[in-house]
Length: 310
Ligand SMILES: O=C(O)CCC(=O)C(=O)O
Image (tube, rainbow, N blue to C red):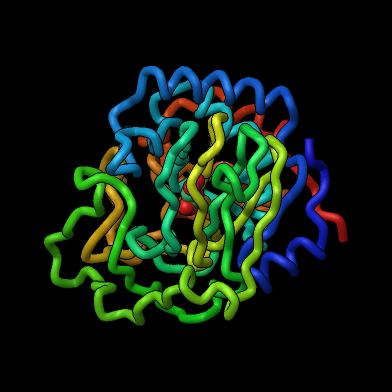
């Protein structure tokens, strides 16, 4: 289990918008989650989606599994993943946005097109990141993520993007509210693929349990999986101190309505606070005694704690 996040790693995350942390999860977690992923892909839940139109479910996606599956719940509450996100974003606490299982089956031709995650996420703020952990060895032959270094700082506003990956049913939903922000007027996304040599592109070969942690504004991509092995990855999305709920005209579909209004802190049953920096206390909006789910796993939260080296 990874014990330390260094100041150097915090600085690299701040400058590049994406870093690799080696060995964040140990072999036991990899084994457990590998079995959980095999179980879910064989018997998917309600938010299953195909991201490979020509090969249905070859690029398999499912979100919010922690709300229906004990092992995924255990993963978000009891691994060091939340703490790593909190330390890297220099936040006093982190809330879970959602967990996202992404499997590229052998021979998946679909790439993951260049995109920013935050375009259709219902939040404003800079302290938003994802922790992407592969359960298989990954490199450029089977779908390791790549990032444009520094792209998280290009603009304050998410860029608009013409094409989305995913099936039609899973597309962001139109929000019928005039106050919701439209991103169609935002700066367009540059064509990174056609101009790779102009950008500083980061990529790593990863072992199972290594983690890529990246800001929601960072442009990223993943190649197809043309090998004969599976590429299973678990991405979790995290919200820090400066994040507020923010309606966008087109929004990611969620498993249920979080019940938040524009400008609110994201504390609610659907986005639970999972990690808190030692010595910090809950602020008022974080207290939801009536709506909080029973969190038997959260009592053991310190087992997932990590320390920062100063
Ligand atoms: O796993 C992939 O291919 C895409 C992952 C991704 O875009 C993400 O986690 O934000």
